[in-house]
Structures are given as structure tokens and as C-alpha cells.
Image (tube, rainbow, N blue to C red; front, side):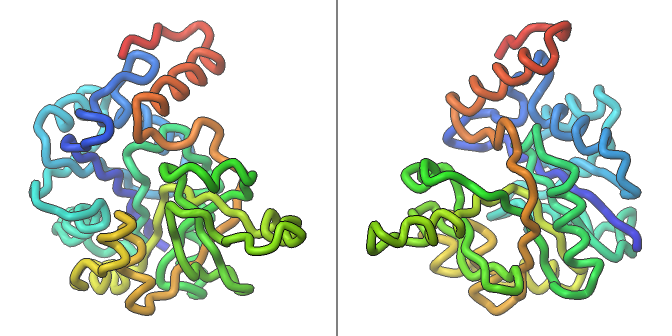
Length: 257
């Protein structure tokens, strides 16, 4: 099945200003994400989607394919949908959205999300990893709860599932899953997603995937190994990501930010 991977990159992030162009190991974060995905050797077309010429120029200089998009998209999925509808990118069976702030995304996460859609089990796919209780108190970490079939029931920045009785901690801990920033869609599910108005749950939690599941779209969750390094949303995240870069690339250039 033909696969399109889109990496959306918005310059207007608020928690980490100019995030796509901030440096990780001496290169813009968005370039590092593209390098990571390209190195997976997946049978897919890869394109970066951005509304900023600065981002586009940096990506093209690195050798990446770039599609320019509108600046008014409310979410990354809306940006992905615009690209998927362009004549140059139509006709793919599966569309994958790798978020532009996940430079250490695992191959298993990308493949796992896509395979849930390729299999026909779900119209949408994503990924998560088993997690420790420490994530529960961190609103920057998105948690997901699934049913027995692997379908997402809810995503939240809050502590889910909630532990009512301390004696049930062993059951709660076995259910803890940390969401990983990757989505896969059938073309039809992607178009349905972006034609829906933002749902109140999405607006309250600031989590775009709640728009889809609140409308009843089935989203499968592939359980994979944790992403070492995680996504980058804050200055502290960027510091950790650069530390990991120096640890895993000791002979590479420095970490000027």
C-alpha cells in the first residue's frame, strides 16, 4: 500500500518560540526529525509541511522535500490534510503524520501506527509506550487509555487512569501509557477529521486527537518501546534532547541553541 509521511512544522509555537528552527545538535529540530524519518528506510514519500519560508528554506537546504501550506490551520492534522489533497500527493492509501517536534521517534511507532490502518482494523492509528507513574503529574506528557482491542478511549494531560484506592496501584500502573506523536489515517478518515469543527474536549485539553475520537472515529494504539528523549515542547525538553544528542553522537558538532 502506498504511504505518504507528512511532517508538519509551525513556526508560531508559544511554549518554545520558533521551535522548528531551534537547534538540536547544531541543526534545526525539524531537520533532525526529517533525518530521523528518512533514516528509517520506509517505503514512503516524505514531505515537510510548513507555512513559514524560513522553515522551508532550512529544510530544502538539508535536502528535504517541502510543501507550503496556509498559515491558519488550527492543528497539525489540518496542515497534513492540505498537503495530502495537493495533486502531487494524492493517491496514497495511508497518510502518516509525524509531528515536527519528535526527533527521536522510533521506527516501531511510525510503522505500528501505519500498520493499524493498513490492516483495516482502524481508520486511524497512533502509538504509545508503557510508562511509569511519574508521568501522571506532568501536564506536558499526554496519557492515553485504551480498551481491550487497543482502541483509544481517551487522551489527557491529566492523571489517567485515576487511582481511587491506593491498594489498586498495581492495576493502575499496568495501564499507564504515554502517547507518542505520530498518527496514521486512511484518506477518508483524514478528510472527515478535518471537516469536523473543533470539539470542546479538544479545546479544553489542547489535544487535536480528541476531535476525532469524540466524533466516533476509531483510533488504534500501537504499543511500542518508549521514545528515548521524547518530544520537544519546552526549553527543558530541548536541553534534554541536546544532552541526549551529545551522548549518542559524541563526535558530532556541538549543541548551540
